[in-house]
Amino acid sequence: MARIDGQGRGATLRTALVLTCVVLVVEFAGGLISHSLALLSDAGHVLTDVFALGLAWFAVEQSKRPADKRRSYGYQRVSILVALVNSVTLIVIVIAIVYEAVRRLASPEPVQGAVVIVTALVGVAVNSFVIFGLRGENKSLNMRAAFLHVAGDTGASVGVVIAGAVILLTGWLYIDPILSLGIAALIAWGAWRIVRETVNLLLEGTPSDVDLAAVTDEIRHTDQVVSLHDLHVWALSSEDMALSVHVVVGDLPLGDAEHVVRDLEGRLCGRFDIGHTTIQVESCHPCGEIHHGAGEHNHPHGHLTFTSGEGAPPRAAGSAARPQ
Figure: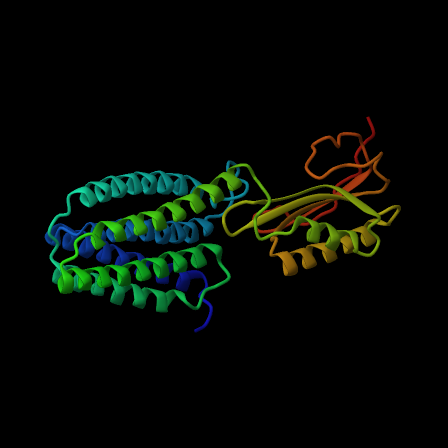
């Protein structure tokens, strides 16, 4: 299946979101009718899919908005606010499921196994269709996360089918709250991953899939680059990364320095998928060792600044800094 782009990606996510909402309604109604906590828990897990798909779709739509004077990086980080609401909701769902599961372990309630099986099979069928629509996209972090959410829910629905069969064939009611605890653990793991990623984005931490040492090595082995310092790599959103760095190139003409920067931009984008770079070219050596991210580099250097990336100003050489 071809990679999904632009409007196609948004349409795919929108369709997946609508279908997942249908599964949510069906499983919630089926859980109430059959008195199955496992089915209600799976409906809670489907709710996590709704959040994940909605977040991915929202991020795609927001990424279409251009940067402006108030939001110079655009509106991609709005997804962080949604992720925070998502994680809080998931934690509340986990607490409710665990409480009810413990209560039912102490006092099992009758469950209609046939209704559980039919309802869960509907969830499996719809989720399988959604997975088929999402499987062609593996580059976008948002799309990949949405795919994993739906795949995980499909597995949980299969477990609910098995639980319904066990109840129908043996009458062993404990399988329902036991499976519910398993689904609650699955939701809690998903919530923890969302919280961890959100905190890292808010702290402008280095993205987990970027090796800062490898980025340093890539820059250091660029022709004409003598040394580098003040290297920062952070995520603008779950899909877009930015980089800023000072590179020392010695005494180079302006045109040659710009060629060095263009070469760096291309390789950083191609190897690490860093689309927005700000590279300050210095014409003298730094005064001592500067550690990455230390924030202690404040002595003046003659420099040229070049930038690249969507929403950035046109690539042009800045004037040399005036010593203070």
